[in-house]
Length: 406
Image (cartoon, rainbow, N blue to C red; front, side, top):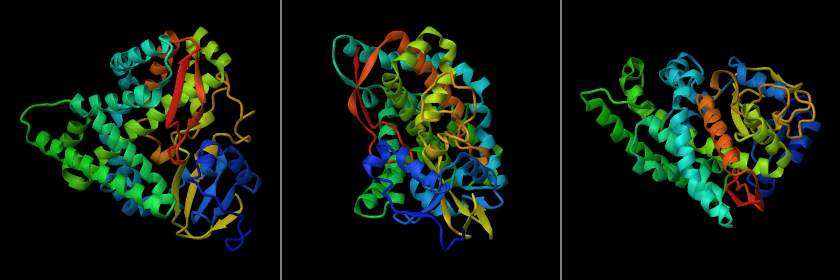
C-alpha cells in the first residue's frame, strides 16, 4: 500500500453523535487496517495501540515542534509540549518533582477537603429529591481549585480560571474543523488565552519583585535558574497557562465521566464500595474505557515512514486516536466491557513517552479521592439521559450530567 492509495474515510470529528459514541467509527478504522486518511479534516488517523505507542515514542520520525505556531494561539506561546529536544526536558524538570506521586501524597488532605466541601451542598440537594447537573455544580470546580492552590493564586480567581479553561478547551474543535463555528471557537479561545496570559504575566512580575519566599508552582518557575536563563518571557507565561488548562479541563471531565460510568454499571459501583482497594484500578478502568484525551497529533519528520504497512509522506500530520487505542482487542480482552477487576495494563489516556502528561499523578489523586468520597456519601445514584458530550472529541467528556439519588 502506498501513500497514493491509503484507506480513505470522510467524517466530521465535531459531529455530536460521533463525539458521543465514537466507538463504531473507531472499529471501522481498525477494520480498514488501523491507518486511514480522513478527507474531511485532512488528517491521517491511527487507531491501534501498538502503532500509536510507537509514534509517541519515536521522536526520530515523528515530532510535534511544527505545531508551535498553532499552539501559540491556544496558550499564548510555545510550551514544553511542543519541543522534542533537551529544551523540553529541562522545562519539564522545573515542575517534575512537584508532580511525583510520593510528593503529591502530601496534598491528599487538601484535595479531600476541597472534594468534601464542594460535594456537601450537592448531596443535600440530591437527598432532598432534586436532580442536579453535576458538571457545573461539582466536578468543574474541584480540579480548578486544586491547581489554583498549587499555583499559589487567590481563591477568588477560581471561577474565572474555569471560564478561561472552558473557552481554551473548546477551541480544539476549531483547529480540526474549519468553518464559521470553528473560527468562532478559536477566537473565543484566543481571547481567554490573552486574558489568562495577562493575569499570569502580572503575577510573574509581582513574584520576581517579591523580596521573600512565596509558595506555589508559578513561584517555582520564576525562581528556577533554567527559566531565568534559558526561557523567554513568552515561554514562562505560556507554560503556566498550559498548566492552568491541563490542571482543569481533562480532570474535570474525568470526574464527570466517573459519575456517568458508575451510574451505568451499578454492580461495579457496589464492588468498589465494598472493597475500596479497587479504587485505583477503577479510576484507571474508567479512563481506559472512555478516555478523556481522545486525540493528539504528531507530524512525520522523516522520509520513507510507514505505519502499520501504510506509507505516510514527510510533513503529514497524524492524529493518534487514543480513545480507539484504549479499546484495541490486541491489547485487552473484552475491551468494550467495563471491568474494575481487569488485569493491570497501562493505557494511553495520559499519552506516553516524552510527552506523557506531567499531571497524571495529580489527576489520579483527585479522581481516587473523588470516587472514594462520592460512594461513601451517596451509595446509589442514577444519571438522566441523554448525557451531553458536546462537540469536542479531542478532549472528550460529559459537558453536562444530570444526577439524582436512587
